[in-house]
Image (cartoon, rainbow, N blue to C red; front, side):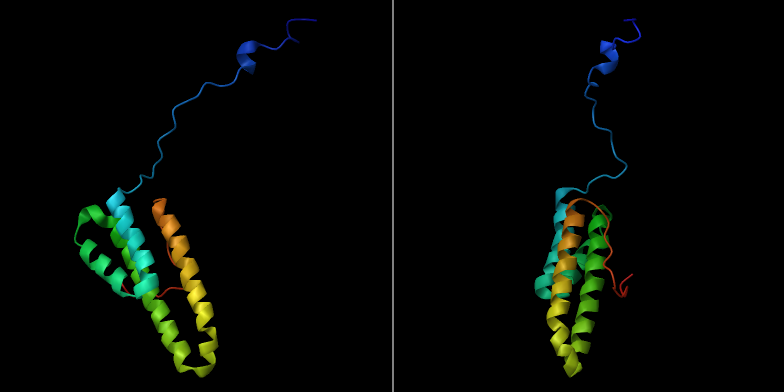
Length: 132
């Protein structure tokens, strides 16, 4: 056997553990994240009331930009869901679709809350952007 056939222990050794690389995205602080999640989850129980209150409280504070963005998005979504529920209720055939709308609302809020906890941006699908 030649030296070329024998493995080099330095090449086959496991790589040394390295410090994790910093990412470009920074997670929001806890209070900011909790307010943003509260805007999403609050809409599930109070329709537009909780997202509106959180959005109005946070919109003037520059440190709460993360909360403002998520609060605006949650408010727009809940306004859209309210309009859809009214339209479905007015059309008697649409009353049968209200459970599907509630399921869609709940699923979107769960996804938005998970994204918010992870510090990711989230835009609800099929939403009217009434609040800019």
